[in-house]
Image (cartoon, rainbow, N blue to C red; front, top):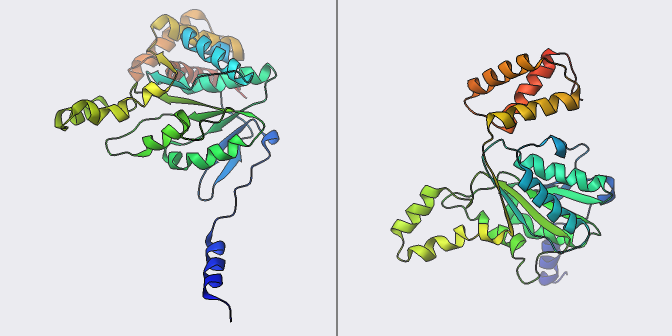
Length: 279
């Protein structure tokens, strides 16, 4: 008769998840982290805009490019928080910088992590730590609500815990908020807490753990038009200046905003009307 303890041990072994196997990192330049089950899905083609076409973000571009170049060379580099106005190229800049460094000959990998998968980040870091590559861990549109505890998992990347952040991983995150949580929630916690400073410090200080803060602000009309002209030149769309200016201004007026995203949306419409393919 089989010993009861042996049967229990065998049952637990069957229930335990199989050890996660690393993918063939040499087969792709970008991956998306998926859970249930844990895996890194390779991305065949990254949707991105070339770095020279990202206008009006010169300081952020130069700073992030220099930081990433240091990291790609195996030198010290900071985690970066790209925050600010919607549609001004925060996520596009991360992807464009990644492409630029690869064009320079660095086999740099991009791994996208969804905010809702932050609790699994420890398992992901263990996987990346053992790989012979440099990884940009990219978390897009990062923010936290009042009772959201996911921010605690993010500290595993920023602070690293006992083991420390892997030397071959750097985190780039984008957010519309500088402090990653709504201002009214910060104020509510401050007003209702016994010790207001301590009540909000843990969440607000999360942003302070990023070595680089890169701000993105709404563009003016000249920058907006320059973006569209840049797209026209890059993709060979021939349009008269007066026509372009009038239609572009009308387009942004109907959107009620002016940004890099609105510029690109207008250009896509223009290219379609002119019969120019963007692929």
